[in-house]
Length: 178
Image (tube, rainbow, N blue to C red; front, side):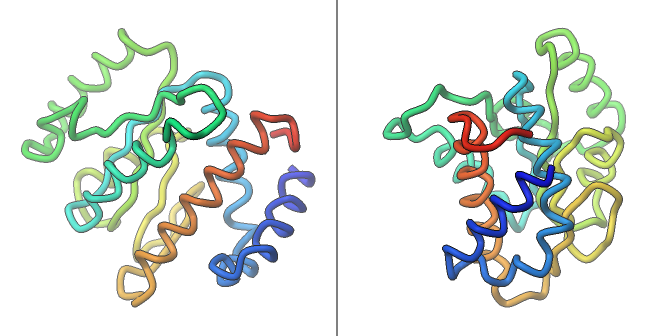
């Protein structure tokens, strides 16, 4: 993880959009290390957001797998498309049905949750230790915390996605290891 920490610091310092992250890199690197390891080892990623950040699902799926990237497509999926009732009917029974289905279909999967801490989708995402969590307004173990009232929140989310994408590239192309 030391190699990833140094690479992340260098990448942050090379990109002024990421300057805000330098002091928080020690929170960022452990969860990214685990997440990228899951991705590289074939886990499917199901993106789940709260209502205010629903636009991020489509953005992430399209940006991670842009055809111009010189890498294999990665199994990132919008939960809205794959699990359509997860938002409309956010009940424990629905969540259990979806996880049962995913256990059958996928060898390995994680949920990437982005949003507020105080809803059923967040509670669902917090149940599995391997999930990649960007939680607003709450500190949670193995998550990256952001403030929903931050006027630069959307910019920060986009810059984190950009850094994550660069990290995946660096690992896939052997620049660093996780």
